[in-house]
Image (cartoon, rainbow, N blue to C red; front, side, top):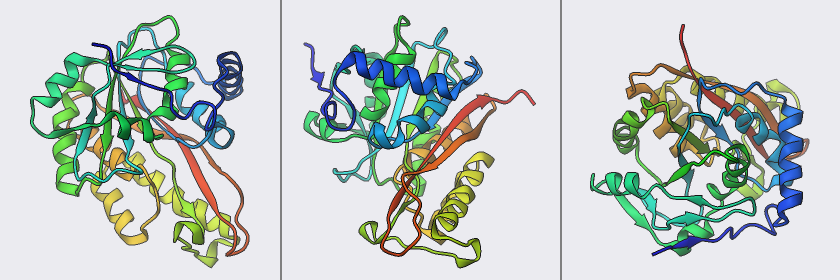
Length: 292
């Protein structure tokens, strides 16, 4: 029985015109001009509307060599639905204007059997944009290469459980036919986000935001989920994908393949100069096998 998750944000967060969408993504991927590498086994990429973060996201998805990848684990935060756990999609296919992406029901069953996951109602799935915003890029990059998805909604998971999920998913990292797409925006700054941290020593507000984000990005690059957690506790930076990123760091820490995260692009939706302004930051990273 087919159970379809519609492309519920097409036509608003990005164009539902497949020709225009393909041209847009192609343009951004060409502009990023990144070499595709089979060593790249995962990405961290933003999930805002494409007019805001589409260009930055190309610096993540442009690294992907689709040749030997048959499965993509998609980890996104939950914006509207509260759960202290991770939740699995109940759909069998995710629609995009660039073609459908089937769900890997076998792996979903495997994860279900651990008893650690809850199931996500289709309404919750369609209301959430964090994973959907990765789908058109994945459909584009994997064009002509059959690939299946394992969508995992990462709830408000406490540090102990982030580590448990990381250990549980680590074995999938060791299989080079698996790929990981981790969804997160960075600092949401301004009174409308209830977050106005400003360290004047950096100069303008947008410079202070950049310094704060870069501190977090540097810690993610060290691969240490505990240091990242300490940073979040200290500064409370509004990184909406903090839980998916933490789970991913625990996965990398527990896998036998040595993989290093490196950020390749950082942008802000606008440059905040006064306390009345607001902005969202976008950062794109590639997680690459580290032979060193």
